[in-house]
Length: 71
Picture 1 (cartoon, rainbow, N blue to C red):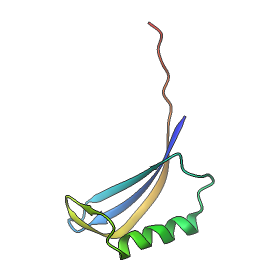
Picture 2: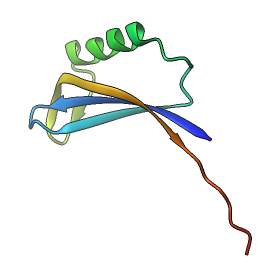
Picture 3: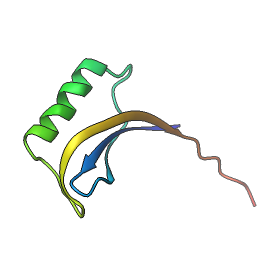
Picture 4: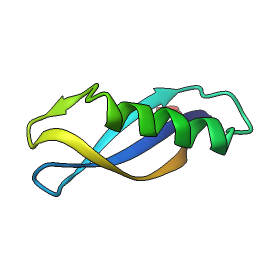
């Protein structure tokens, strides 16, 4: 089971831009996460095809299960 923390932001075009972190520390510290996302917005850390990130939208923890099928 692979887990990914997805931080979602809104860019200048009003579209969602996602920054993913694989294998995040759990449980997720929501206060630290919110502070990190605020820093990303305030310091214009990433530029997307839709322009700079202008606000945070949300975050989610995604779990993916992969099962190999024997042939």
